[in-house]
Image (cartoon, one colour):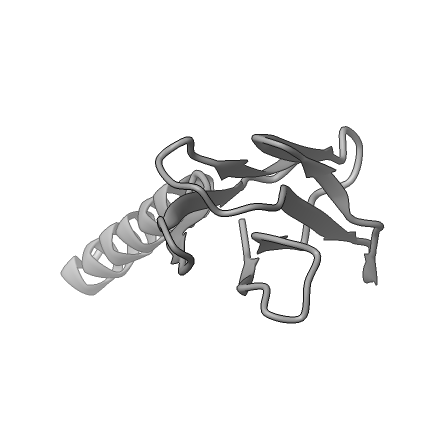
Amino acid sequence: MTLTRVKYGAALAVAALSVTVFAAAPASADASKTWIRNCSDDTTYVGKVSDHVATTTKKNDGSCAGNAWVRIKVQGSWGSWANGSSTATKRSPVYKIEASQHKDCNCSSANLYTLYP
């Protein structure tokens, strides 16, 4: 075996290993966004999404009225909104969530954020 073949074989092995390592590692475990809803006593909201669960949480640190809202996009379509006074959750146990939308009220002044797992 010539030295060139050895170098070529070693280079292929290193390339194959690095492709395997990078392909196995997820791009990110989850995505999140924290924002403040501006009212007389500001309230903090947190949106999070992973491959199968999306949540919006309203912290109890202000006096803003309204619920936490979330919806998910699965197989190319946006689902309906879910809401809760402190936490809203949407799950997709079978299909991977493509994106999620999070907002702080069901009003014209809502802050709307789109997250990707």
